[in-house]
Length: 190
Image 1 (cartoon, rainbow, N blue to C red):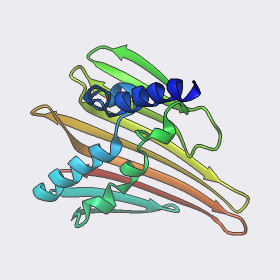
Image 2: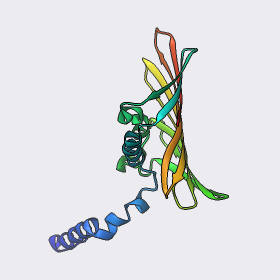
Image 3: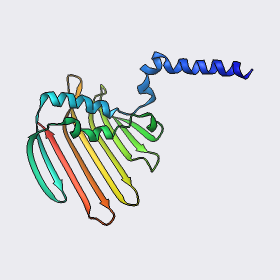
Image 4: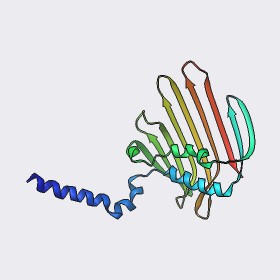
């Protein structure tokens, strides 16, 4: 008797998991913005365009500004990939606040557990769902160190696609017994 109940239930579960509609509607299951896809599309576009980038780096109070070409956009935008919340492990671990502002939607994600490294994330989407602004903050600590990172990125929408126009990142790291290290980067794509 138990086998008869278990077998149809298992078949129904497998069928629902493999149906095209469940795959097609994956974005309904995970409301998070897939930053790996965003970064990958920017990497392809910017590698082909090879734009000049006006970059200002501040390290422990020392500032330097240069105009340069980025030789490895994958490395440059890795911080976006590392801020990706669109992973099965994160489903249900962030509160989500979605609000409408004139001409756009704000999606705010806040960690529900203290052990999650990404603490907050805000994505602003235009009326067609294109990413126009992103902010993300992360924090990691243990008995030996403390690290906090903040990133921000602005995008232009060109022919229905989000194109990165500027980005910034800042980090603070404190290791027990050593000085606090501070780093800030602001970049504008020309």
